[in-house]
Amino acid sequence: MTVYVDPPDWPGHGRMWSHLVSDVSFDELHAFAAELGVPRRAFERDHYDIPSHRYAEVVAAGAVRVGSREVVRLLHAAGLRRPKGRARA
Image (tube, rainbow, N blue to C red; front, side, top):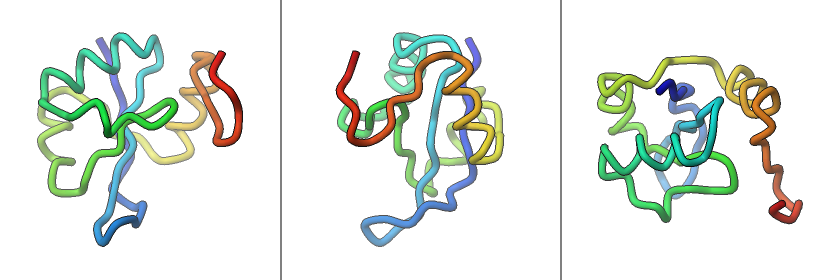
């Protein structure tokens, strides 16, 4: 199982956020998040939003650190990208 996380560079709701993604499947991503106790409500279309205070924990659990552009590239390559405004397939 390999999941990826970008740096917590995304502002929102008074804090900074990372994106946690899989390059294989949403099932893999949901399983990894569940193991860490990340609530399902943190899943947004194709990624989990991870608050900055949990970034080190996610990396320690096995998420591979990548840049934000790499997150998008991985999602596209896996066919898992779900941009805003597009209906789920």
